Image 1 (cartoon, rainbow, N blue to C red):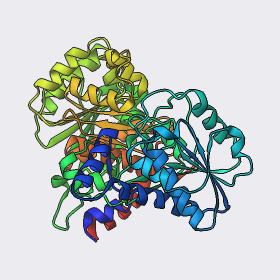
Image 2: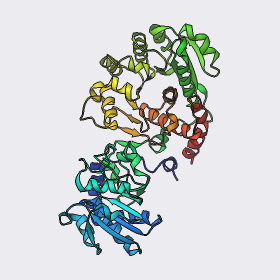
Image 3: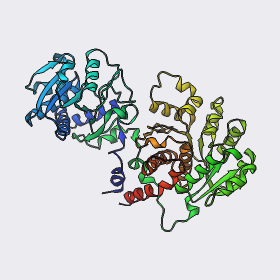
Image 4: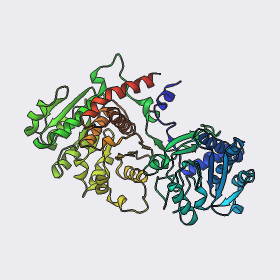
Length: 510
């Protein structure tokens, strides 16, 4: 097993997430290379039948739709009947309008096909949702909606084909109504809708089935969206070397707020140190110097008062990553500090108050980012901060997904944008994006974002590129929270990191 396989095993399968168009291209290229489309459909249907066979219950209803998703359902029905299951097929639409491989799959089903009615669900142990796949781009209405509502009210175990019907494969949105499945079987690669909310909440246990599409097809497709995990960035993660020393692992700086708001900076500093930065310094206003020093051991504290002093401090090129915003205060003073940091050669992480301070002057911030000659920049807004800083995107009805919002924000700003949430998206100006699916609910606690900002800086200080550093920090943040469990507070996150690192380093070394 190589390193990529090892770290990939720590996540839920391969990292690439394919749009509907990209999945269609994978199918097309595979068929062009000599694999008939009906063979791909047969393998997909068998994978669904295998998933059903692992469940209890013998009475199965396949609710099939008018496209290839329905074709997969017909294949599953046939194979389950051959295995001795009591199988019925309920069809939404006009069966006579089936085309291509779906029509062929339907013709191979020798059992009855009934026009869909909710009453057909009565007495079923298992329902196979084969109505609509990831390509759905319109709201569901009429009989299809009635069947989805009935499926959700049923006591049967629900197995969705490709994606629960009613979930948009590109953005995870509910299109009028959506099946709430206990199990989902998808093919070749996951789609963004499997990972983004609310789509992820509708999928239940997700199985990724190999249906014979070669992984080499990804070389032609060149996907830009990825599930966040070590398979994406593990090969570039800064693992400590025996001959290494602290100065080789970078020096992160956290800019502290005034006396009453120093806790956020200390959380960030601890996060940077635990993330592996060789040295961490809190740049502190004079009035907060004593409290910062009294509450810091391995973290150093230096007096830095105002933007001019920060600019002078950062002329030391050993200080190669800086965090601004946590507990820093909103207003002109913070704007000046941010601009001073952006004028340096250090990588910059802007969080919280640093972002809100530019809510009315976003162009000034973006211009400073785009004109700088230093390291990379990472912006880490939560939803409210994002809406304030990127108001034009938030108000644009055409930018209707979290993924697209983050991508466009990255292009507009010239920075890597980390849009927080249970499905945190990290987007780079070049179009790459990662989506996290490992954040437990315990992360919804004060100060967790401050720790995350520090962790990003800690990885930047060690030489990771901004997109990889931000993505890795998000994943590590989620893993640390999950490792600690219920009762988590922000102070616990850095202390949970060593165990996560141990597991990660073991996988990378394999």
